[in-house]
Image (cartoon, rainbow, N blue to C red):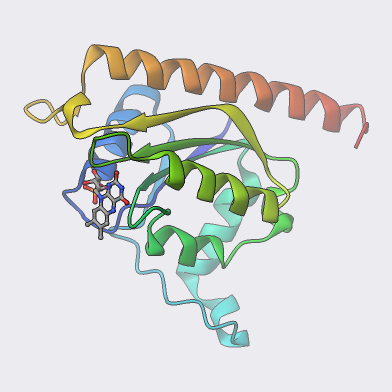
Length: 179
Ligand SMILES: Cc1cc2nc3c(=O)[nH]c(=O)nc-3n(C[C@H](O)[C@H](O)[C@H](O)COP(=O)(O)O)c2cc1C
C-alpha cells in the first residue's frame, strides 16, 4: 500500500520535520518535505505544469493509495507552504482518496484550527479526510532522539492504522467499480 506523507512545515529543523522523519523511519513511507523541495509559488501559468517539482508532486499524490498531511498551525491555519502546494493539486489526484491529518501546535489547546482548515481544503479537493486526527504539542517530541514520545508514537500509529483501513476500503470500492 502506497502512503505519501506531505510534511508541510517550511522550517528544516522544525517539529513538523521531526514528526515527518519519525514517520518515514518507522513506516518507510515516501515523504514530500516542503522544507527542502523547491516548490514554486502557484501562479496558474501554463509553464508551471512542466516544472519537474510540480510534475513529481502531482505524480506522487496521484499514485498514492492514501496521503498523510502534516502541518504546523500558523495563525490558526495550515502553513502557507502547505496551502501553496495543495493549490497545485486537484480532484484529479485526490478524488475519494483517504487523507490523514496531523497538526503541530504551540501548546495551550492550539492545533484544532489547523486541522479544520486542512479538512475544509481536503473537501475542496474531493478527498476523504478520515475522522481520526491528531495534534502534536511541543511536549510530545523526543528532541534527543529526533522523534516522538511513546504515547505520541502510539497515537500516530492509531491514526495510520485507521488511514490504512480507509485506503483498503477505497481500493475495494474502486475494484468493484462502486464509484
Ligand atoms: C508564524 C507562526 C504562527 C503560529 N501560530 C500558532 C497558532 O495559531 N496556534 C498554535 O497553537 N501555535 C502557533 N504557532 C506555534 C507553532 O504551531 C508550533 O511552534 C509548531 O510546532 C511549529 O511547527 P514547526 O516547528 O514545524 O514550524 C505559530 C508559530 C509561528 C512561527
